[in-house]
Length: 263
Image (cartoon, rainbow, N blue to C red; front, side, top):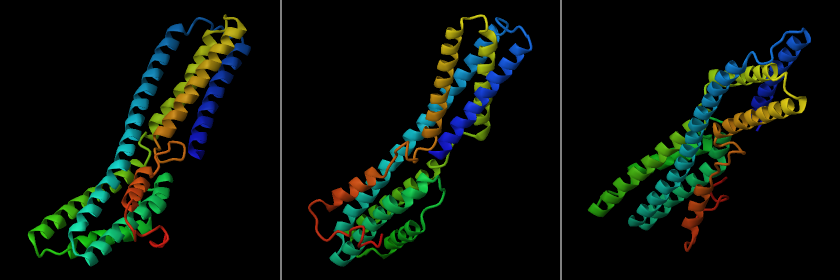
């Protein structure tokens, strides 16, 4: 939220600067009305194209994050089900590790992603190591166990890849140089509009400038939100993970709770 507010304030600063420069030139008697019409069209087109391109990029980034957030619990639930083939002691221990890892992701690691962290939470790292070690301890004494063990390993590997991809997607992907271009372009567009519309009635001029300022502000704010899909505003929450845990608890007893997992 703070980052988005900072971006909006920076944009408003450039917009105010553009307006002040145009107002200062007007006070000095510089005749600018009608001189920048072609330039306004050119800059407006380029600025609109840039914002549209960034909007598509940021939307794809957000969609990828939502997709990965759903694929991770799917792989973990599949691993949980595959563990049902093994003897009771192995099955109970393995399923407990899977569920506790899911709780750790939802309660601990997700907060790190909300902050844009590139590393897993320490608790999630420990529980992830336990899952990886679990793969080497599964019985291989029958064809059924061998097949189940291989499938569990595949599912856990897929879940691990999804977790790493989510950590990657938690990072903002729009480069700082493009943000700088957006801010400068917004200020330049306001400067040109103010200078070129001096001959227009004051009410019309104010409405146009206010509409452009509001539109650009909304675009920049939406870009900042979509570029951080795990922020509280974007709301890519661990709902798929918690729903998967609830699904595993349905019709089963003795499932580890959040408290049982020490979280």
